[in-house]
Amino acid sequence: SCSRAKDVTMPAKLPVNFFSTRSPVIDLFRGQLDYADHLRQDSEIVLYFFYAPWCGQSIAAREEVEHVAGRLSDQVLFVAVNCWWNQGKCRKQKHFFYFPVIHLYHRSFGPIEYKGPMSAVYIEKFVRRVMTPLLYISSRSKLLDFLSNYEPGVLGYFEFNASPQPPGYLTFFTSALHSLKKDYLGTIRFGVITDKRVAEEISLVRSGSVYLHRHVNTSLIYPNDIMNYTAENICKWALENREMLIRWLRPHGGKSLLLNNELKKGPALLIFIPYNPLAEIHPLLDEITKVALEYHNCNKSQPAEPDLQHFRDTGSPAFDSSVPDAHMKLAETFSITKYPCCNTVVLPQWHSISRTHNVCELCINQTLGVKPNKVHVPQCNFLEIEAALDSFYLQEHTFFQVISNTIECSNFLSFYSPFSYYTACCRTVNRHFLSFVSSEKTIFQTPKVAFSSHGKKDNVQYSLPHIEDRNCFTPDLHASGTNITGLSCRTNKTLNLYLLDSNLFWIYAERLGASRSTHLKEFVTIIDLKEEVHYVLDQNQSLVGSTLENFIKNFSILYSPLKRHLVDDPSVHFDEQHVITEVTTNTFHDTVFMSEKNVLLLYYAQWCGFCASLNHVFIQLARLLPPDNFTVAR
Picture 1 (cartoon, rainbow, N blue to C red):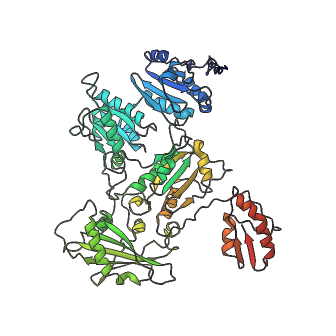
Picture 2: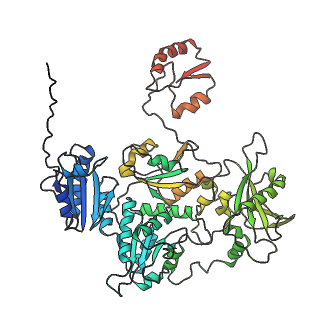
Picture 3: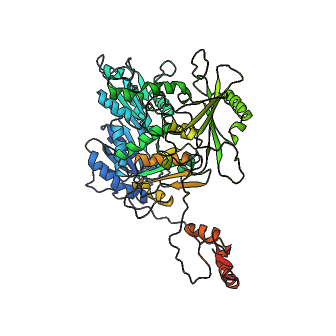
């Protein structure tokens, strides 16, 4: 009887060195994980580079890791471990789903996995953060630099005079390492203050206090009475309460829902800039951050950063006392700019073929007229807004057929309170009138306002315009003259702001409309998935704060003057001899919509097999149709 031959398998070849023998990286190419753990006992900072020798990403990252090791080998131990050889302990004990994997250890704390770009500058930046998770804030100037950074900052105050190791310091130190473990982008910076006078600048008086700085919202102090003082709790508290004015996006290159999940949140402003994380200064990033700060600064009654203003003035009050009294009285009179509780109402078109609308801003005003006390409402009451809308619609005819470049304002009493008024300011707008860029110095300058209150008319220099144009009319006492302040809270088209490094992700910019021939890799685009549109900032304009502000404002207004960007195919060549006209994005409007002839249009795709078989039929049809009456296009 015939017996089945046994399967013969060839044993795997013995692994060889992955890194050069002269490299500062210790290469454990046989997967000696136990020896790697032994090496870690004698070093403060250790970086493990787990690789598979056949993996393309591992081969590409090898040079980057070697570069970092050449710069930091005197402070950090670099160990590479082959985690693919089937006889090695690494393969038997670790179960990685991808390669390479980078783990960092700070003494006994770890592993801290690095998930950022496999680029030398990014790896080095992360390693340096693990080396020094806390920044030492020794003076007021360093405190100001720390607080003015766009990334969220956590500060701890500890008195080192009492003992060499103040209570809670190690816990705070470990919480900084925990934040790197949970947030590989390292967006939260941790600092420590030891000087009592510096700590008093941010109202920290008790040793062991922890302070979370926020630019727009109120800064917070860690609630010891509610939460236990542990490293995990401090990290969790900081991550949950941090303020993200602008976020970095770093797709890892594989299949990912990162962009999809962010774009689903609403309209997104994507800014591509060349970025070096190791550079000490980033002037372009500082300018973008300033715009983001103004955009999110919804409390116009105080500066964007009151504590920073206090530092800069060094003793002078936060608000300049030289502001004329007239401005103060104006702010007092129209206190709804200070405590806005408004709703924008767009009335129907008064004429069937007109593109004009009357747009009204309806505000609850509790300080106009007779009043027993000034009442400050911290947030809008939905029932009050509803009641105000009911009252407004009853008087809608007053504002329905007004066609005027002036702003018509009226106050009418609340049905429920003799001390509450509703203020409605309306104006006629159309697509051309609502342009922030062209009209800021012309149309919006010194507007004539007709202000009526119970039938009495008075001339007032300023009033409250449409919610999107408020800054153009109300004098800004504390801002630097920009109209973008608080715009994110005054429009229904609020943008989420994102940054991408064009050195790494320029391919995304090209797919979104960036020029391939540009030498300067700067690009800005707005993507609105819900409306299925995206807009591109002209690349001939330099990327500065004012350009970015105008781009955001033009998107935010009611009838945006921005032109929708459409993808075009530059490879299409035109030949007048062809009987079928090839239509592209740029020629579609003129060829199809503006043509005086009848147009027969075929939509096709390069991968469509049926389209290819239909082509000869379509050509025959084009020859049969009279060319004087028909344009055949595809």
